[in-house]
Image (tube, rainbow, N blue to C red; front, side, top):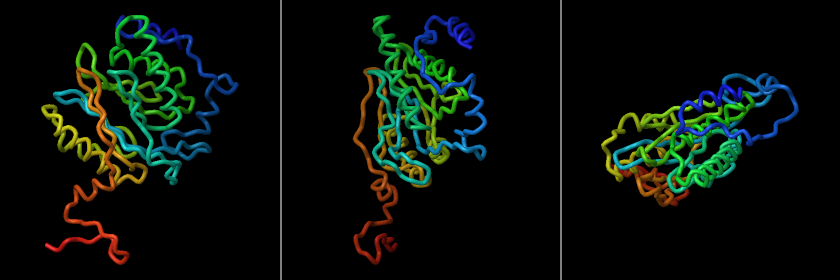
Length: 272
């Protein structure tokens, strides 16, 4: 298997080969037949082991760079485990990754990717490209395909070729596009993005679109919520913006509804 990956990656000198030294120890066994038989990470069938996950992440290119936005809720089945999870991984000064799927898988492999990108920088005296970083991640997880990983990550950044955006999942699928949304709330986010996205947006329009898409996803998807976290990737690096509570955005986008502390009427609709 490693020989096939090496053969595929060696055809392009700009994309690094698989790091052979990197190994993650698995339980004893000859293959992943146990996991494939008893585990389900895509919620497509009943299984003894089912990965419970939910989130909303999105990223899109526009004329001034790449806008990345996520929610912050972590769930364990129907239980909200946290409302303050940082789902954006700051790989380096020009690269960001997003987390969707199993929190442990995304966090671990995101840190491994950060390490590999740093080693590339030290060896080559330059920052790694967005395409090469996403290829490293795809090559690594390919070795564990079918082992039960649950991961859908976006790799976004700015390099010599301009803005870049890739999607990589635990099946080693690697796709590039101008717009992605990943997670259980992505169908709701796509509804907003598909209706209003255009490449020729300025920064304020891009921020408002990302904010609205995350908000509407958290409003309709029980597994998404918390705060909106946004980053703008540009030629000078990335810029992080202040966090915004989605519960406050509800009243911003529904001005006809006012909040009251009255016990008998916590939500009051203003009369026309």
